[in-house]
Amino acid sequence: MNTNSNFKGGTNNGGRSKWEKVLIRSERIVQLEQGDLEAYKYAIMANFRLKRFEDAQNLCNLILDLTGSGNNTYSKYAKEMLEVLSGK
Image 1 (tube, rainbow, N blue to C red):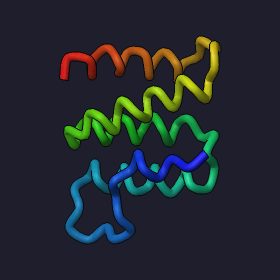
Image 2: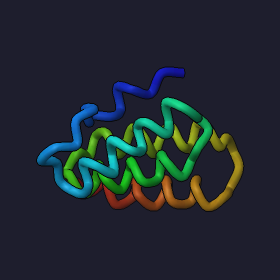
Image 3: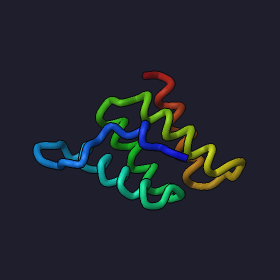
Image 4: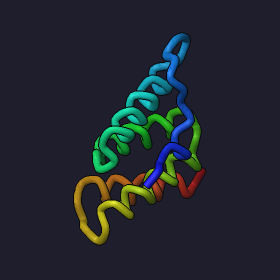
């Protein structure tokens, strides 16, 4: 599963905001370990702060796909963020 389309960060950190750097680091972690749900969570937060709401929604849905029907911390976070994002 390729998730790169959900990330908009580049590889150069020069002149980037704190949240752009968080997004870039999260992307790198996900590239190494696609099952790292914590990295997705940070990427959602960064996309939200950067007003990239569609990207944040896509990542929330991806977390829900990865967690299946499980009701864990990450799926709860994704569901809560989708609720917040539905108003954006």
